Image (cartoon, rainbow, N blue to C red; front, top):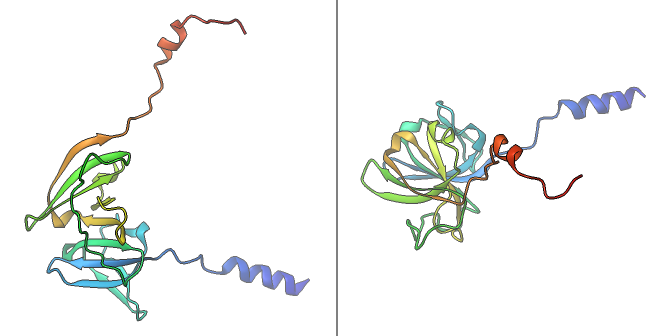
Length: 173
């Protein structure tokens, strides 16, 4: 019984599974760093904690970061061939154009949640969903402009309570 209690205590104190994702961080000077990053920590003002493939932690201040590319693997090219949509996107959300401080632009789709845009950066789904990049995080400091090009999809709204009360019933229940 004591062994079972010891095993149970050991299982409870084990650290949770890793949530680090493969990323390529492009710095403001266009150098790129490969590593692993916890995406849950992206909206915070503190530096990014990049875990390098060699297992070292590297702190990157957001002011030095241009983009964080979430990639499927390190071997594929992370740079996007297409930086704009060829037609109206099919993903639900806000279709936006990001303008970097150096004048370069990039389009993407962000969730239709304005509170998420008030963080220290914006996460977008890039135009080419078949590329090696799943999504991109761009720190606020790297942007000079963010423009909403359109709203894709519709917001599902409930009818007002007064309208449903005034609605005649077709069948008695």
